[in-house]
Amino acid sequence: MTYNSLFTVLTDPALVDETLTHAIAVAEANDAHLDALCLGVDRSQTGYYYAGASAVVLQETISRAQEDAEEIDRLVRARLDKSTIRWAAEMGVAQLADIGRHVSARARFSDLVTLPQPYGEGRGAELEAVTESALFEGRTPVLVAPSKGAPTPNPRRILLAWNESPEALAATRAAMPLLRMAETVHVVVIDPPMHGPNRSDPGGLLAQYLARHGVKTEIDVLSRSLPRVSDVLLRHMTDMDADMVVMGAYGHSRFREAIFGGATRYMLEQATVPVFMAH
Image (cartoon, rainbow, N blue to C red; front, side, top):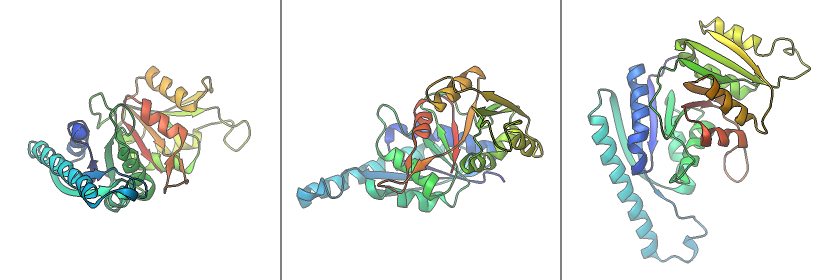
């Protein structure tokens, strides 16, 4: 597998440069085509804000979203025009509650989606919905770019979080082109089960599978010495000076199609390197 068709979604003018820096780097490294969706978001809540709103107010929110889309589109085209990659840009307007439909319909026809961190200061509520829809509805791997730090389209040291789950295996398979190019991939297992077929060799079968693909692996078995598994991963990420984290994306159904589980959300909040995720 190669990453020939890339996709990104821009919903905030302030995040255009940051997001495209990473997306362009990935496109250059893979000689890939990048599609950019420039979305103006109507963030008013249907059924709440709209209940007593006049037609004038409703039109105002739509007009503001259209203006945002036009500004984002202008910034995106100006930046991509200066690059050497193949690209296309599309502009549109979406309500916050309906944004997932627009994103997933396009993400599913790409090999990898590059998005900004969905959490943090100045991050809009739509960023979480965009990331979730690409992963859970579009079923496409996502590379979440950190708010600070240089792009690493060819990471040398990768932390691969392994817990034998289908999500972790999906992320491993989707990240194979990156894993094969890395100098070292650390398969990190936290508190492996005391009983089961792999108790004597945690991560061994995965390491064997990766070795057959030419991936240079090391297995790091860690104890859960901190309250959250994500805390242990983040500390090990720093200790091994990782360039990227590969992990499964975990969520659960509630009021929306999917909502990130605590471990996934915390990693996306705290990671200072790109996080490659798949579901």
